[in-house]
Image (cartoon, rainbow, N blue to C red; front, side, top):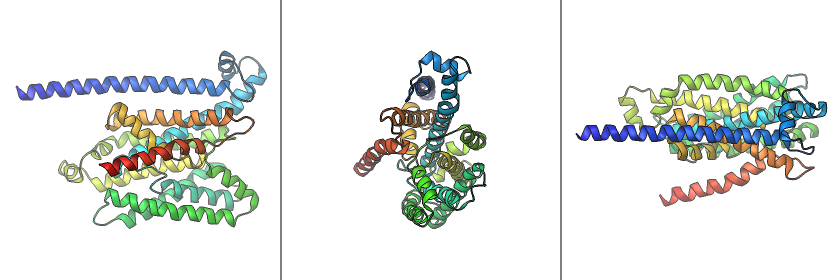
Length: 345
């Protein structure tokens, strides 16, 4: 009788989470669609909603078609993809490290990607294609992650030690980036500095096609790694008892997180705290299971970056404020709140 009651309770919880996931996905998808339409319509030259949608399909006023298809549409797509990449990267890290403060920009992954990308901007000849930029950022992020992992390793990786080491390495990488900017030519230093603030200003279809393949590869890898992700919800002893290769899975998941964060940094720059906030909100909405957490985190992160870009592009005309300023303005107080809550616990 007790087993029947427990089974009914589990079935009820499953249905409740299924309904909450469906509501979250539908609501966030509608929110992303609304932000997209607003972004297509608003700007220094406003375009009506219906005219913007028609222009997206190449119909209507030729000037509207040029503005929407050439200037606004690729920028919106880049914002959505960058936000989703940072959010999923943070969701994976928080699960692997089992620490609510984990995020690509907190534990040093973004710092490593920044070093690689700034080195690419500063020292690579102008003839080198921008398609190589994600590789430079991912290599930088990978090397930083391996350094953090090596220093934190002591008969396995302790999640808390990994975070503390990551924070220290992040500060070191920030100093390296500043060093390169100081001793680089003025024209490259200027472009690198603007990029470091976290901006998608001037994004074109080239940037869309630079980022899209990396996201596609990471999505495929996540599909094959869903079991490994869910094992991170258990303690190491329990996961090993179930036959899970904890350290091997952990390395694979960190590599996926590195690829996502590196690719996002290479196109969008250092957009902070999206990877910290989005997984927390998603976990409140749908719970910790990764099959639900990943898509909800991706949608919320995409909305945050796209909305921040919309505000930065329209609220202070004729200025175009970088996205990273707004996400940091939201994320820094949220980070302090998490620290305070962790201290009280």
